[in-house]
Image (cartoon, rainbow, N blue to C red):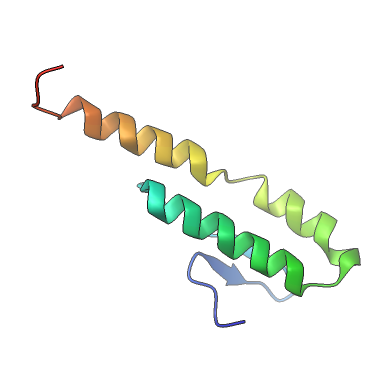
Length: 78
């Protein structure tokens, strides 16, 4: 696997999510795909600890918030 774009490697072998403030829908899909690839590449015994770390940051919430922010500035008629 190539180096992750949305997670940083920790000394214990786990990956720390980068908590982006603004996440587009595409970026959210890419983050989730990267998480899946990271989980598949690690030993089964490590996956539960990694999943706990991933659960601390949900990119879909950031994507929802960013979409809502963009909608505030949408000048098109409803």
